[in-house]
Length: 270
View (cartoon, one colour):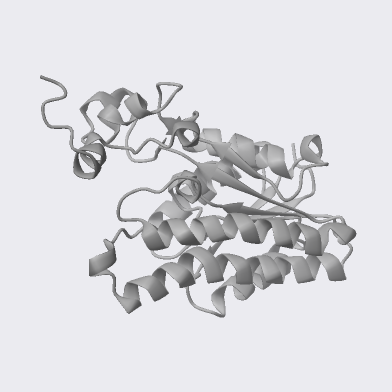
């Protein structure tokens, strides 16, 4: 059933973003799906959303480029008529050790994981204020914003910075009835089916580091994000919701190799 509201989810052709877009569609939103390079997956996501009985459009662009985030917002409004929720999800991880950092890698991480998200939110907020839309802005941060992991000094720092920025954005926009929140995913399996986890080189052991003893799914993130945008969360703003099975509470890594490289574990298990 349609609810006459529109959401734009960046980076929603695949992975977590796709899960978010699908859950908004199930909640009755018309959806703008965005991709950068994964066109076939974006088309597939649109087909799946349309099958749920809501309208869907497909947008393309590299959100790391300065003019793209605003363009995506304007295209959404032009094609779907309005914008009620903006989900800044598009981002990417690139791990580097301090002694191997390059200026280009740092710039890329900044453009994609920080500047692009904020420029899109700015354009969405301007539209909402000008049109008296008491909407919602949502940012994908990470459990890495709370606990340091190896090789993520720049990525993690930007995610932590986004958590802090969300609080200021909430203060700036509260007078307009616009809520600003974030969501911090933990270990989310977006690469294989649940029944294949036991054989997957990465996911077969990651659940062991999670207090709930299981990996998350894209739908877990999607349901949390839709809740944050809903009237059920109407008094929530300036918050970041951890959707991580308790991972951030203990600050555990995703792999035993990280522990072995960080600490001297020789002989402990013998």
